[in-house]
Image (cartoon, rainbow, N blue to C red; front, top):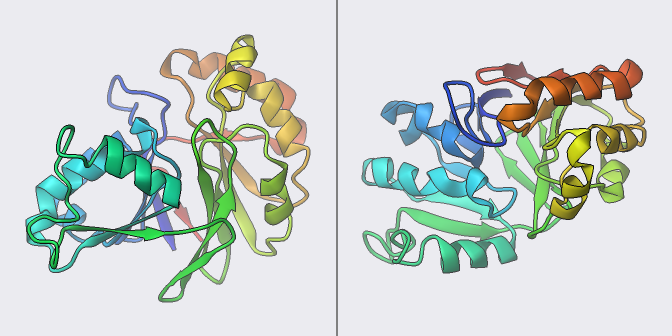
Length: 255
């Protein structure tokens, strides 16, 4: 499998700051933040599956524009995989005819551009030889993470999450773990805010990584643009031998 980072910032501003979105092979999006907008129409047309971690705008806004751009060019609807509560939020607050049209009935209910597939934690979705496992996450809205398993090795994306013992219970059982992408949204001076928002800061990240029992290459996502240097310096000082690296746009993982 091949994962290309389209966006991994906590917000926007400048060419490097695109919000969370990853292109897996040619046909899967993992979250759909502003980074999706950098894909060509030809690339967008090939996307059949979108796995959403949660309903926050920085992870879902490009679903709307993606469908508007290429819905009519595709032979079948795109499938959005997410939890039942997130589907309900998207229907109520985004694809509601007030903010954006409901593409589950456009152009017709029988042949729409969008369909939802409800998923639950622990479920494994098989797409050819690829497996996507739904992982637990703890956030201010219902949320999940994902394990992508090529058969040869696995990549784990935590999504947005605060401290999460349930995640490590699962991750520590992954025999072929190769990459871990984990969020750290705030610097340590904002620890109280991180706790309230159910995100991580460097000291909380260090506490979480102490629970990881497997070797893995670790990459940090979702940093606020104004605090990248400070946050990464704190991470370097607090995480010891783990040596997490800053995730950046256009980084490609082969696994």
